[in-house]
Amino acid sequence: MQNTQKPRVLISNDDGIKSGYMLALANALVPIAEVYVFAPEEEQSGVSHAFTVRRGLSVKKVNLGRDCSSVEAYSMSGTPADCVKFALGHFASHGLSTEGAGPGPFDVCFSGVNQGENSGVSSLYSGTVAGAREAALWGVPGIALSLHGVTPNMLEFAKVFAERVVQNRLFEKIPAGVFWNVNFPKATAETFRGFREARMALGMFTDHYSHEGGLWQLDGDKLWEKQSEDSDDYLLHQGYATITPHRIDQTDEKSLEVINKMLAGNG
Image (cartoon, rainbow, N blue to C red):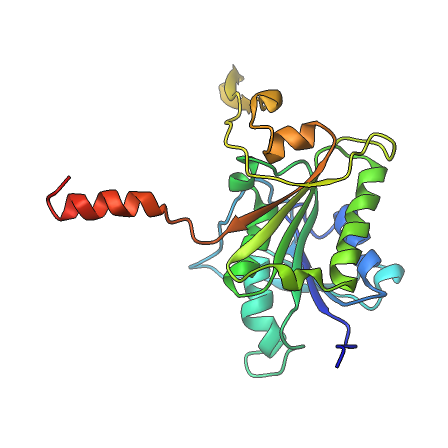
């Protein structure tokens, strides 16, 4: 029998609860999903997978406006990982009490839509990607959505992609322990070249620091064209939207063999 119940969707981000891009995503999903938002009260870009311990977190209910009147939204004083961790680990079961009932399990978690790319090594630093990773840790399909360029066309493509994922239940194709990192290029509707599956690029930033007023300021960029042609950095720079599957398990199997021989005194 076909499942006719609307999917229950969690949305978070690292740009904060006031992000218009996150609001646009929530608004797009309202007709086809039961939407909840948990987002940081302030911008949390670059915090990676940091979360809060040894101090309390505040959670405040937020009105996202008339277009999202059916969305239950909350701001939190913590990081994106905090937001997803609380929503999945507590709110889903207990709501905002310690013994009450929550809405129930979430079917998918979107993190974004982020302003700025999170491809390649950017994904390691990204609070947006950490939101999707945290969902995967809880067994919930996680999808990070990021825009390389701030263009209305690409925001529309990101919304349509998310709608398709929810409407066709494509999130069910994400295996346990895996999450998707999706990046949209600097492109117009005319120059957008479509979607490509992609590996994570490994090229590092061209980091450099300037010293002004007694402070060190970080700047840098990526060597986009020097990355592998099947990588997210390279393809994103060619005008493609990239879908990169990431794994929770970061174990390097070959190194296990080396370590095993070392411990056995054979290496």
